[in-house]
Length: 260
Image 1 (cartoon, rainbow, N blue to C red):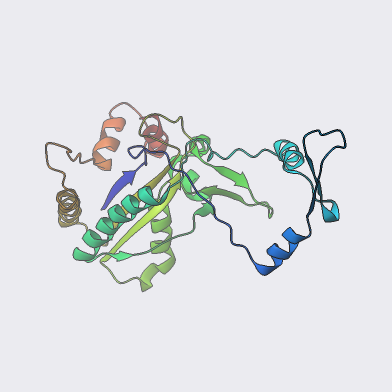
Image 2: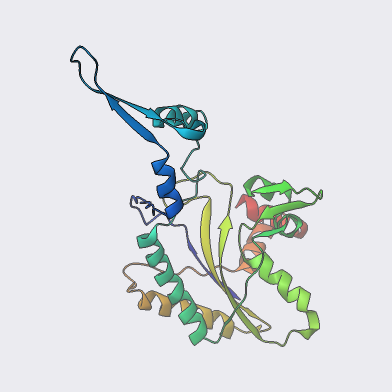
């Protein structure tokens, strides 16, 4: 049984500005003295003129501006992603701390996995069609890899990696950044964060009841009530049975889920 909460960062707006400061060091002061400024007046009473002699071929601000304009870099983050300035980072940290607190209260231990996983980890679950929704590529060693679109396959890989050495039941949680190459809409970006709570080794409904209770406690902790949110419970077996009544073979069930 697992519970998943996703935060797509679409609900937090705001414009931030960064400021940079400079500190004068002794070496910098010496360089400033190297610039000799000579003021001279014309012999016929004209306005004074100021010339600047720069050592070492140093260029003027105008020349630097022309040079930098040819190397202009887009300062916006890639489409579907965003930056976190301090005020937004404080809010994100506050929310993630609530995730971890609830997980700890219910006895879950936190784990983490690589952001980069084998592409096969996702195609085996959902078929080759899922590759259109992945940030996937071939690395320099010729291996097909992908940025993780979700956390559950990575957690399953850890469970299989431990094998019989894993003491059951196991209660793990994770908070991670995920990417899906999908059309961006309001409140849904290509980059999102996911909070997973997984119980391995319990076949009864107690696992479902526990994770639902944990999510309800989280909503209460952040000030949300039944008037703000509601919980939907899905069942893979129910969906598989429904698809089966339509004549879809069991081995085509993953592809059917993608279509749904």
